[in-house]
Length: 207
Image (tube, rainbow, N blue to C red; front, top):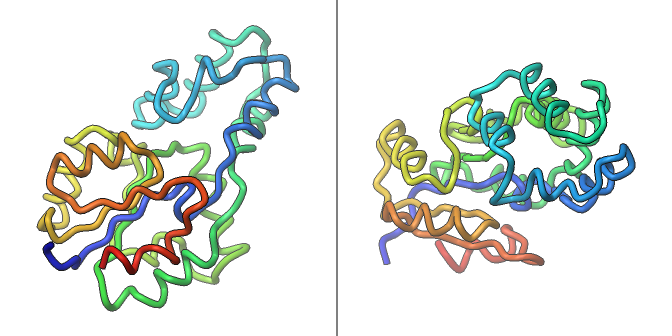
C-alpha cells in the first residue's frame, strides 16, 4: 500500500460530536414532528442541500424552511433547534492533529452550512485552543464555501487539484459510508470511522 503523506478529516463525528436525535427532539418540541423527513445525514429536502452548497443565504433558508414547515418559527428558533445537534469538539482527536501536523499534510473537508459554521468556529477558540480552528489544518474545506458536497466525486477531485495531492498518498477519514465510497472512487485510501470508533485510537493502523 502506498505510504500516506496527506490526511483529510471529516468534521462531524470524527473531530466533533453531533447528535441528530437531539436535533429531531428540538424541532419536535417546536411543533415539527418527524423532522427526519426533512433532513438526515444522506437524504433531505433540497433546501438543506442548497444551504450546504452555499446556494442560498441564511435568510433564504429561514424563509424556505417556513414555507415547508407545518408551523411558523422565528429565525432564532430555527437556528437554536438546527444547532442543537452540535455537541462539541473531540479534544483527543484535535490533540492528535496538533501532535502530528509536521508528519503529514492535514486537511479538513466537511459538509456543513453557514449557520453551523457560525456556531462551531468561535466555539473552538472559546473552549478548545487559543488559535483559529482552520489554522490547525493546511487547508480547511467547507461545502458551503466550496459549492460542492460529499459524496460527489467532483468535490474530492477539486480538492486534489487545488492542493496538488496524489490521491493514492491521501487518507480520507469519514463516519459516513457514502462519503467513504466517493473518496475511494477517486483513488484515495479511506478509513470509515464507524460508531464507537475514535480516530486517535485507530488511525495508526492506516498510516
